[in-house]
Length: 119
Image (tube, rainbow, N blue to C red; front, side, top):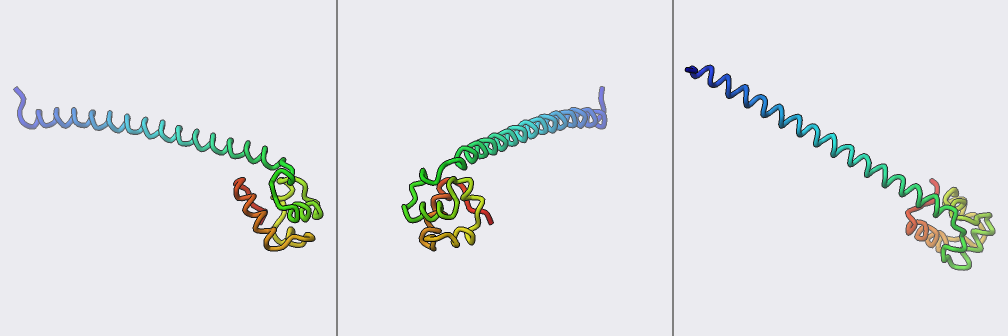
């Protein structure tokens, strides 16, 4: 026959192993969740990079810019989106026929493509 102390010790032992099993299960779940989240982030990053690479090779003519803005960019030596995003706003404003209105149009067009000017 067990006394109260032995019974309590046995119950605490059982409780200890149950808590330990719970902790191990929780740890595994957190590791799997972390791996899942990391894989999701990597996948999104790859997709964004792939889309950016595809978009940056796009000719300026395909952006549906006004004639004035498109001609101003070409006069400044910008013929692709890649060349455009490598420029700063200050550099582009120096191009002939590019003013604030054209700059706003450029910014809005790039934003719709999840891109922006350098700097």
